[in-house]
Length: 298
Image (cartoon, rainbow, N blue to C red; front, side, top):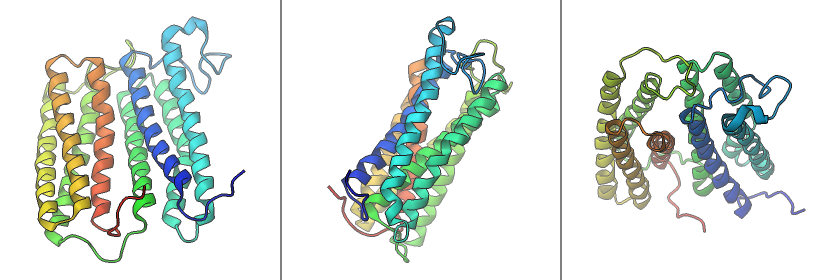
């Protein structure tokens, strides 16, 4: 077996991207659970059904979908442990990577507990929302890990002027508000995860407007960040802010389309994944304000 690395190598980079990809994938599979009304496909926890930890033929396709989502947690855990082992010998010189590798190793406990509470509370919309919010945080941490793998530790001084940094933080706040309002809006909508699950009782149409306003403001802020990055001559900021604007543009198009088409399941699933990608892209832009000026490693 090859020795564990003492510096960043291709294995570390591969597992960094794999971790990020899997965190996004489980958002998609979790969305599939809700959007196919499979939230109670496994009606108990930690077992799937009484007397069985795995789905049974009696549970049908809903049981398969819900159990498949649970199974993916274990795949993520295996990848998290391997990633940690690849980093462990660098724990002194790269404490940032060490802790970013440690957290996902315990994330399965958090997600499993939240998932269990979700089932045991009959898909309470606020618990479901908290479950999704935890996924957003884990996607962001995975994106931070990828960034740190390629660009190293932050430098003591800021790489952008104060006004640009202020705009970036305001935009980040708007993105956060957009995601949170999106979670609350979803809790009032039709996709409860099961026919008997409760909704939060709030006005869904009104919440859609509240959700869209900070989204448009964040898009405007991101566009200004692109312009500012060009003026600063920072190619890395240009690259990441353009990715941010691109994700926001697609997210807005998907959001408007799904609202007008009555929230079709594929578009809702895409909207969920894009929300996580948006939060991750915003985090990367913030990290770019204070990082080594270096190029991507092949």
